[in-house]
Length: 240
Image (cartoon, rainbow, N blue to C red; front, side, top):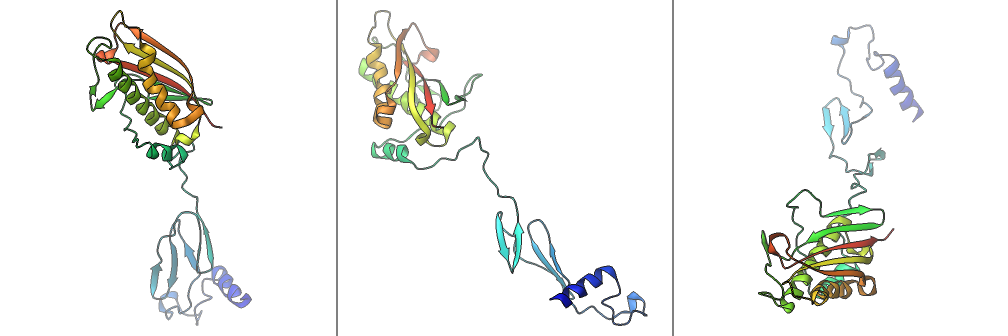
């Protein structure tokens, strides 16, 4: 091994070390028969010889061993502020309940679906979305019954869960539901707003158990955007 090292070192120090006859010009020298040292690139191990350069397969990110040589490359981690979705206990609970979370649409105005401030996740108010650009509409206590509005509030609860999952990556990161604000588009004499917003509150307790029990306000509104029946927003505490 030491002789090989001396040979390689000698070749670097003396450009004629590999030539059998140093007195001849370089262009008249016979072909080099010794294999040159291992060459490295960022992602490929390359070996040069008198037969040309042969490239091996690219080395995957991370720490890899290739024919006795260690190649250390930086791992590709996801941004620490973005948590990938996992199938945790809460997601399993949703499956047991036969629930599938809807997609989170892009905001239709100048706001974001959620804001994480410290250990609190603030979820923007949402209305009962029936499909792309379609919402449940009407006056509760008039052309919409309490039972129908209850289901609308439950639907909004699903949308809030979807927004939380999108923001956190997994609903297992929810410590507890802190506060729910429910707004009901009712007739002037309608006074059963709590029964309507129970649609959302009941869902949160079904999914999170005791951690889903929350402080709440259920209020009546003279109108809501797009004449939707309900709008609900929430505050969630996130696990450290």
